[in-house]
Image (cartoon, rainbow, N blue to C red; front, side, top):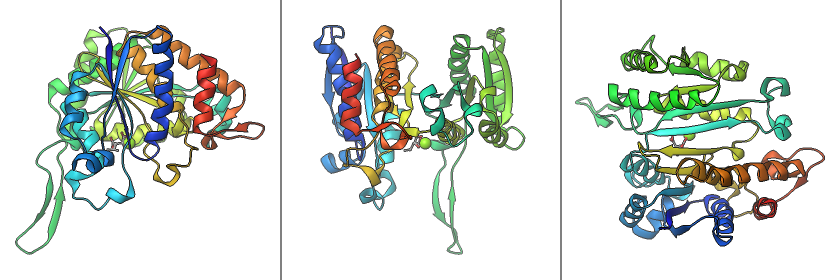
Length: 357
Ligand code: IPM
Ligand code: MG
């Protein structure tokens, strides 16, 4: 039976970059190496335009029936003044939560060809290879109570709740330990246990789970220090595991270490390795429709999909090495452009990867 893939371009540059990634999937399909069936569906602002909400019922039903989802990006200025529950971001958060995609893997890898693109000194980032494991369906993003209320004096207050159950901490830390086992066997758990009770419990549970992974060297770090260490000497990290919000922030910082957020893929997995794959960058309304966005993060997300959900690691390897060769040839989109290289647009970059396969 064919593997079913839901394709959700979303908004802004999502449309352009997903188109290039789909070409790669079609290439494998047409050459008989991948038996897939792709179905497209609107999400985010596109979902609101099509069906009046950021996660239309049909899109959710499709997502639930698929083996994997290829996701572009969501958001646009035209949606910023909608009520909160209709904003594009809610579509993405609802997908994560409805499908229980609790494990978000965000690798930050520096391609040697791009060492100069980082704003940090080349020696600080050369050879960088970090995996951030971000908890994605809990914490302050989803905790109750939440809201904005007006008190008796007419003053408003806004509030959210950062909450984690032991089972939630245990399952995300197990994923992180498993990944560490396949890498350099070092795991750093990032929390704020000096201030927050929820972090105290986090630290306790991660430490207990570590008992099942005696080969992994576990360390703990406060999130403020982790932010500093990431820009000071990022190569001290192998795998990082952290809560939803800390992971959101640290993964953007880690991305920039590699020169461009336009290069980094991500996977969001459930307990059975069913997953959603998306570039970690956003919809970039400022450059949408111009044909200049970097499609490589989305193309590399397809590689992650092949590896983690579709059991085709050999095709994932092929995509990753094709991307390396394209960079070797000096082709660059605007975001990673450097002296002596040739600047290309979204489509040209996609075609160049295709030509290497
Ligand atoms: C991310 C994004 C999302 C998040 C937004 C778009 C809701 O920043 O995937 O990192 O905060 O999780
Ligand atoms: Mg983010």
